[in-house]
Image (cartoon, rainbow, N blue to C red; front, side, top):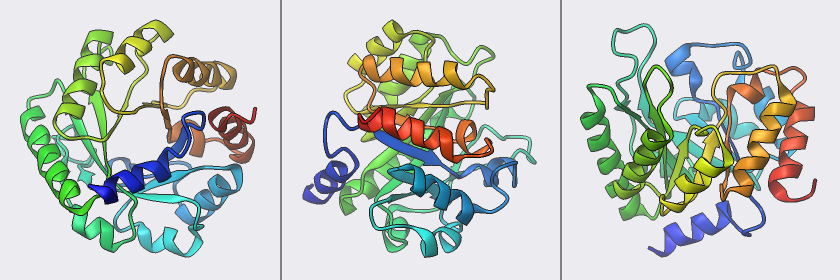
Length: 250
């Protein structure tokens, strides 16, 4: 238990400092999309801007390790499916907590898509990952998504976040439910830190930053935002603005 507590304190060293995390695992599910043609340059720009944690696939560690700075934490994402198949929403485990620790991970990441026929199998995988992480003292992040046409109601998102936490996740990433009041309610009913995801890239940068600020004011523990960052050029200015907001230096 001490190992997990120590690693969680490294991720959340001060209540006033929120976690700035960036997932870079999209290439398995979506291919080498814009912004992820090469990982190392993206990681360098994120580090220069003040990111706390980058989350990559286990194979991508080969590209990230040479440029990863000591103060930046590493997450390994072990859920996978591809858009090439007919069951893209069904994520399966392709790695373990033990393997992630061997790669230098500070955190394990898995994904559960709620509201699809394969949800029970993904919940089972989340439970397996939670047991592995508990044995090794490794924090577990669950990316909890509701796969409905409208992205899920606030009630759906609150249910998914709580289910992820109660199945063993130490941190939950989920979608923003549309208002500060609903997100505050979600945070109150989820007994672990909650991060918001960025979703599909938007051109409205100020509106995007306003959502981040509202989420923090509502009790959010930080962000786990990918495409709304790495698909922007230049990347640096928005990364620095986000870091200042999340770290309380704005």
